[in-house]
Length: 96
Image (cartoon, rainbow, N blue to C red; front, side, top):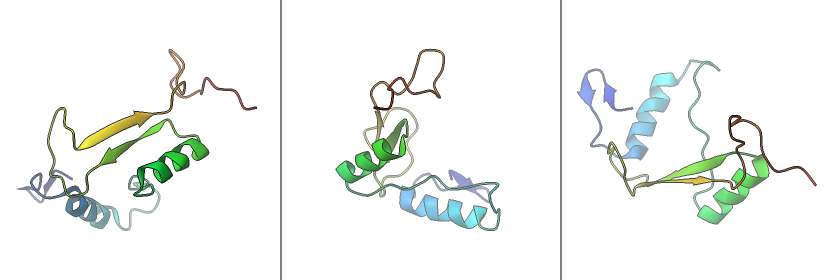
């Protein structure tokens, strides 16, 4: 959430903005869902990503405000070999 009821909330922490988002989508049923949260420990989160077959994950500092553009507060990590050129939904690895 970047704006709520006309108010700019970008200076608030990700933790606060996520709480606002969860309040806004409460009662929406399965139409709108918040992003899945992984373990707070990076290695545990990576194990969840690999074990669930996800493409990767984005690690974010919960206390950081919103910053547009490139930032070191967010880190995108992708599973090597997950995508195939022209087909981002199919994994290149085969099950063994």
